[in-house]
Image: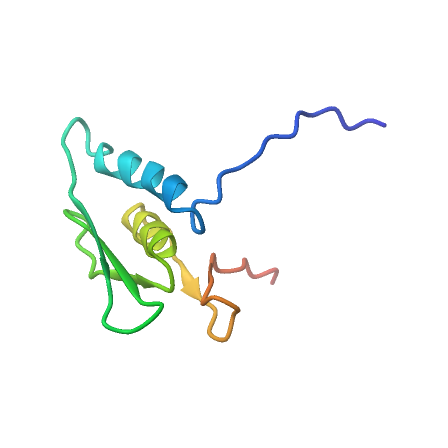
Length: 101
């Protein structure tokens, strides 16, 4: 077997609120020594959460869970394009696929 690597468990940032708060902490302190405010609120309907990051010049990002909204907002604040797959089991967000053309 030529594969020699160590398996590492990854945090489920978009599913686990404790892991998502690690993202909040990283984003909140990523502004060159300054601090950014990260706001997460529950929407008026079921399975609707919003996250807004101060200074990101973006509207609040929506997700079907608080962790998902946090992760979408953090990715967008870093300039990563995120697309929602409508009809996915939990409104999952995915990164756009690269065109192979």
